[in-house]
Figure 1: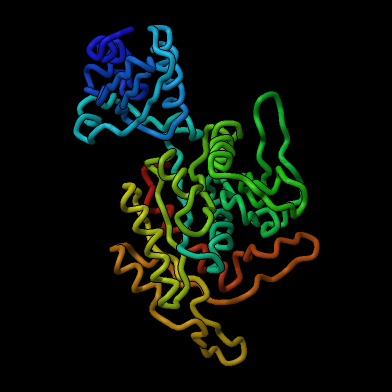
Figure 2: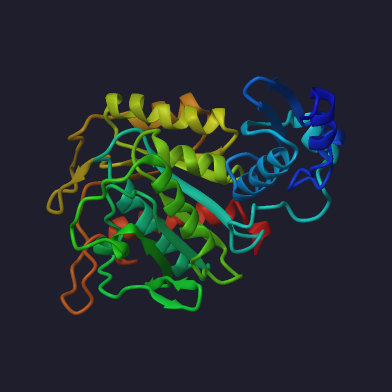
Length: 353
């Protein structure tokens, strides 16, 4: 059986999967502990990106090598390397995206909220549609795995097609859509634990054929800061975020938690969208602030980001021949507001053209 120093030397030969430097060079072998009586070894390794499939691959190889060296059982933990080490060894060229994104030019934007019922999915759908109206290549992942609703909102009746090992998303209004709704019986509940949800989310990135020219990939996250939101933050450290709230102070207070999570995981918050801001009478033009005022402004100020827009209560003009109950037409007053917000977002990433 190996000694502690021998284990350290053995592990030091493994490469960080993203920096392509040995763990000896990155000082990624943090801790080694051996129980000779039980022939057990516990190790802690630091790599540049955790929560990825590359982490699982290196984990399997380490366990296999240590068992070949005489240990009966192996315990392994991972942490992330310090930023200064990552910067020191970061390879030149386009930023690595863990193989999860269609291309390095794809901008991922997570649409988040602190609580349910604020219209986050409606916002996600209409932002995606309006980015597509601007000529952008857009994908939309309905990552609200327990409360999926995007296909119904967009009037999607088709299902994805599988060709070979790839799933081809459904396209509607120029937006490529994938959703948990496509993989369950109609209206059936999803009773899964966190790891299963994380695997499904990974599949949405790796097994769906998004094409290699996608400009924006929007994620409609579940409300709050649970497993799925955390998985997204870990898998896609370069993801941007938009926080949706209502004008009610309590909703804004709860939404601040989602913003705090983004800040703590180094996700850039692009801004705040206030939904259900007011109801405007079609006869008099008078505005009624049914859910109060100031929540969006207060949240944007607290997070030090812009208030991207205020969306009033209202209903799209329904077309029986092309039914999409939550998509606003471009000439609809609320549709115009969504288009202006989409323009603001697109202008933030002009360099991605």
